[in-house]
Image (cartoon, rainbow, N blue to C red; front, top):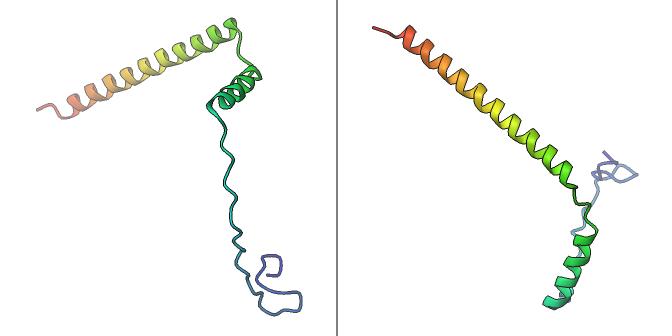
Length: 89
């Protein structure tokens, strides 16, 4: 219980002190030009993928999309035929 802050070392109940609220200093605003410079400098540090990587990732996504679409279509078709067969008058 002491580790959780509910008891003092001598076994008495711990007294919780509310966090002191200090007045927040207003954030210093930046100009649009400085913001644009900061954005450009950060974007230069981004490790952009090369064209072959983008083509590879896009092809993996498209193949996965086609396979999952075909699987969902096939399952929908099979279940709809099964339901029509089971409830046929």
